[in-house]
Amino acid sequence: MSKKLNILITAGPTQEPLDPVRYLTNASSGKMGYALAHAAITLGHRVTLVSGPVSLKPPNKAKFIPVQTALQMRTQVMRHFAKQDVVMMVAAVADYRPKHFSKQKIKKTRSSFTLKLVRNPDILKEICSKKRKNQIIVGFAAETEKFLQNAKQKLHSKKCDWIILNDVSQKGIGFNSDKNKITLLNQKGVFLHLGPSAKKNLASIILQKIIRSC
View 1 (cartoon, rainbow, N blue to C red):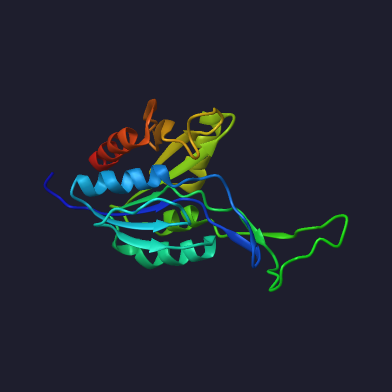
View 2 (view 1 turned 60 degrees about the vertical axis):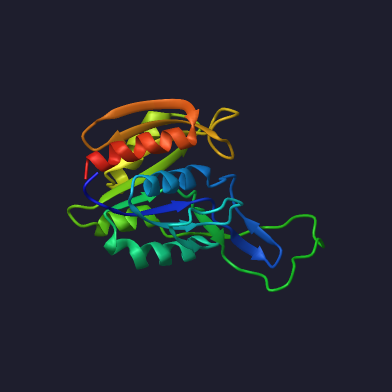
């Protein structure tokens, strides 16, 4: 490979605090994002890894930026976005956060409890609207039904270059697993079905495919 690329990868879940001991989150383990970061470094690229809370060790040569919330992730992505050749939005960012944060632990004193949520920023859509001509932006779509329909809708509504459809409907693949089953789609109508296979193997294939389009 002749050209070293700057690649920003987001990984893991976000946590949206409700009170000092509780938060809203999801089942993302960060394994796919970290596998992509390791693969990119192995290929000789410069990696910035913005990660939500996970139990994984980041690659030694990556610029590692830990975050907790969706707002924090947005801040770091926007801070580093302009210098990137490739941005891979792998993280499972929470769509909503609690409208109010309680400084004290919420007590179990009522028979029911209403939680008001507000929308988090759409980071993928925002960076796609600001991308420069030669930047490649890759989104991920974790789906449980209408896989291709939902992935195509996300690809075109966000206006990213690629969407990687992630089937999370089956046990043993997807979230919190070492294996994944994915489909790569781009704006030109290219489809590539991969897996089920180990995430580290898929990461190398994904990167090589994406990098060829740079």
